[in-house]
Image (cartoon, rainbow over all chains, first blue to last red):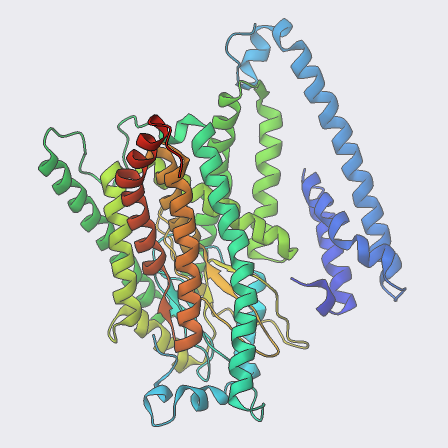
Length: 101
Length: 426
């Protein structure tokens, strides 16, 4: 889909839907939203719907950063303490590496 | 496959196509969200009655040139067509190459996809673990016959569904197939990659990854999303499908099936009678655009002010776990130019190259097959530009690929090995 060729209201609606969709544990959707609408929100000359698109993009970026922080923290904790947690860690492990404790 | 009955009239293709005009374009606009369909042959692409060749089923390649009336002299049209056609050929090389690269990289690094643990698909019930060569050959031929009949049956089923307007069923089927592909197969793939690289991973993180990957994939493919992301997802799912085929099809059966699919493609697209034709004609009668279930589109076309096209679906049939392709290649000159290639073609090209990588001894074979497929694709597009009707694209590439594979494996490789052993460089 080419953003160039759809009217502004539809762009706004699309941006909003992507923003709302991201609340369903979908930071990737927020990432797509930010990347896709970045030009529309910040680079293009102003048009009526642009401020709203801007807010959605900003909020999506915020949400994305939050999720990235959470996931990074969790992954670091897991990788570091996996061996020490013993049974619990094994229970939540998807793959367990061979050779290392 | 002919575009329409008008071609059988006295007018030549050019005049028959002249009347094509924008109404055919709605089919382009839907390209934004090609329905996901894998399996079973039948991807139909059908433009409105006045133009384009529908290409469908099993890699039919259709080319249609749309011209606006009153355009320049024919020579100019010809040149434009070829020029834009050439550009789009290049644009198709990239995704096909990417898909093959992903498949070959996975095959070479993750051993899961080359391990044969005796599991086979129900579509290929005959085992190849037999003692004699003759028995093995017989089994592979029988497997192929079963597989091809499954495809034909699914094709006819799909045509009937379309004919009796069971669009909801088709849509549901499509969505189910893409769900399975995006979630289940990628979960398996991720698991195998982690095991190969000996990385610890926990369920919550994996759940997040797969959920995000799958959900965004469904949104991009079935609804609206950025073009590049959509293309990337289509490439990824083709690669996943090809990997599943490579794993679960027995050795000889895979090669025979590749050959048989090409032949079937040839027959299905060029013969006047067939479910494919019926499908196209039905769509023509109803004046509906049919969307290819899975189509990779190199560019997007939008018609301003176009309302959302009807639910006349893309029909894609899917049978649980089986993906087949239909592809349609179109070269449309002038205002809207875009080339589309069905995902089934991606899948089968990748299966061929992947199998060459899995079973060939070294990289020569793999590279030879890769080059063969690209040459085949070029030739097919050339023929398309010349004949301007639907042509099956699969046969040429697959034939070249098979020829190159067997000759490289059996002739070139021993030759190169001998040369290297004797330190004789040419």
